Length: 479
RNA sequence: GGCGGCGUGGCCGAGUGGUUUAGGCAGGGGCCUGCAAAGCCCCGUACGGCGGUUCGAUUCCGCCCGCCGCCUCCA
Image (cartoon, rainbow, N blue to C red):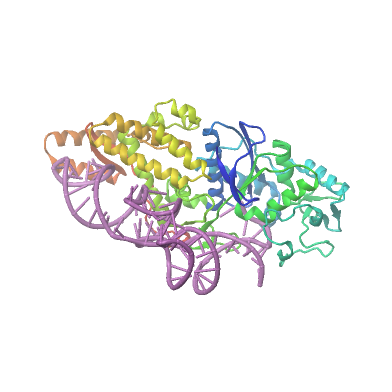
């Protein structure tokens, strides 16, 4: 059974499910006010991997991830660009799905939007006001965090030390600087909804509470997101649920940051790299591999060099698929098979067992990957020694385990040949058969210039596409 | 200022109180190949510094140095 680090208790502990056999998970999605960056990409990949792994572990998973489509940054952008908030949100939501689709991230089962949940949020806030834990000021409605038992569970530091900081818009009417807005009174020209507390819009921390409780119910299993959401966002979500007397997430999971040039990447530092920019220079699978090569809670540094490194690792995996003709084993549907089905499918049980053992340990994907690469080495060695059957069994196993991680390998079938390439390959084989190596080498040069990787095999010239060339320096990726 | 994390061989990155101590990438040598590519084999002998505990520490404890993060919108 999977053991995961729980941010609340700060320990790795077994995932204890509300309903044995099925997992309810809620992952904070994105605010669609800008292009998604590689930090969002890592978050999406980490939870996609967790989700796939839970399925592979034989559990059924309901995966909910929200889209925040009303917030200050969206409003600011709309004003700046003379568009409506809805237009801005639509544009960047579309780019979000484009990016995650490209990364091979499975779509959530539910993708609630904040604007569709306003009525439920108003209800929730009204309940908090009625019960006396929330109060109104001239600017909106705030939660009185001092009245919430266990406030600070996720912050993990003395509440006195939580300095209010230079909060831009601190409300002097607040009872405590830590109190946060549940409802913001409208300013002119902002998106506005009616409510018992006056026209306005919901505070950010409220939507995830309303959505998760509505779609997954009280006491759902797992709440995730980027580590920078731990405080105050998740703290404040929990505070609301607790104040309502509801049980909230059983388990908190947070993924580590993405660093660029040894510094955290953030909007305020303006050093973020979009997923689009990343995919111009690398196979999307290379980024998944890069993410998998570190434990999900560690910070990772993304650079041109680290992406190229991952790209080369990926090529080793694809070379395996070409050598052993694994294409039919690699479709995504097969990858979603639970462990029992994998084992029943002629895979090498020891490798499968080792994989699950490592992944069960707080998703030790670097360890799992080490096992896979080790199996690949042995698969090739066996085949080199003439035991193609034994090698193929290991190779298939490695490929299927990659599939569990959402990393489909591409064999020869993934590289359809055009007529011209096919002709050149035949011509080259004829030249080689005739001993005309000058001619065959000339054809090879021509094919390489056309972007093909040329390999001689017992069946003659074999072609495959080279991955996206990743040379040259992109300023945003420098160093 | 408060709280926390990290420092492993050229780079990335696991792990462990002690016999053989992942894996990847890069590099060197070899095998295979017409030449390549892919692949295989071999090689580097690492754990920030100083003390302590121990028969023995990279792994436990303390201190120091260095880097980073959170406490404020942020995946």
